[in-house]
Length: 380
Ligand SMILES: Cc1ncc(COP(=O)(O)O)c(C=O)c1O
Image (cartoon, rainbow, N blue to C red):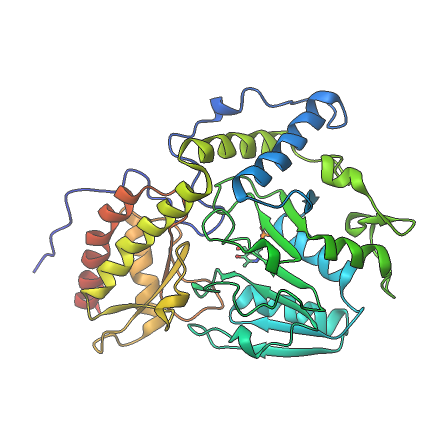
């Protein structure tokens, strides 16, 4: 028996978890003001880079005494330069509950060979931050993009910690409340919640992080693109838009356009509200189906950006093949692109719900998900 396809389709089928959907109604004409073919050290370029920093500060509510820098190599670049520049001064604790966090563990333990306690949890669970010693330097991911499990809040992080907290917040920034007083190093990329381009990373430093940089020199050499200090002093220019190397002025313009849009939807509150409403569409859908469930076991840790789902129906013969077939069917129908689970994650789906996604598109997708599920059950 043929299973009838839903009548309505998402207007935008882009639900990838990175690069994420561009802002609604995006066209490349919006980038016409880019300082192309100009030096990023000229006033026009520097002003744009500075505007990117200061508008980020304004929207995210970053305290005035925190430094914000635009650095090379996207979020990975920002995390790596923080770890390579700051770790080693005291013991470290590496906290991971999915693939990206696990990558930072490898770096610190195998590459930097730093004395570190490693705390991990399986996909779907989270490490209890109350069990972490914050007198060590702690590296963790705020929102685990590949498991859809997030830190619910910063309550477990003591205000009077002796160590630094280094937080990869790339799929959390602009969608979740980040407690700046609990975060010494925060990183993200433009390609996630803002739907920007992936070239550059953002590195946000608390005064304590700056103090570490100015008082500690790691035993290992640092390449130029990681160097944040000169002669024991912070290179202040990096945090005013004098980037270490040449940035893409097209990517900068694109980020500025996205920040403008963010303001137009109510700033951080508006962005968080959009992600919450988006994720709720999927949560509510799962609530009323017994064949699909959130990968996050504790509802308090469910991500509102990278929503990860697992199939729970007994009739499914091979979980990985089934999930891939559902994702492929939805892609072929042109209703959902790039929603297969991350390659290291358990079989399932991952649907991006950050602010650039329209709630109406997720509402339109849900009947298609049901349709694809039924079709694949029948096709097994
Ligand atoms: C939690 C997390 N960390 C790091 C990265 C790597 O980001 P990028 O490729 O922008 O460097 C990603 C990308 O998805 C991520 O989700």
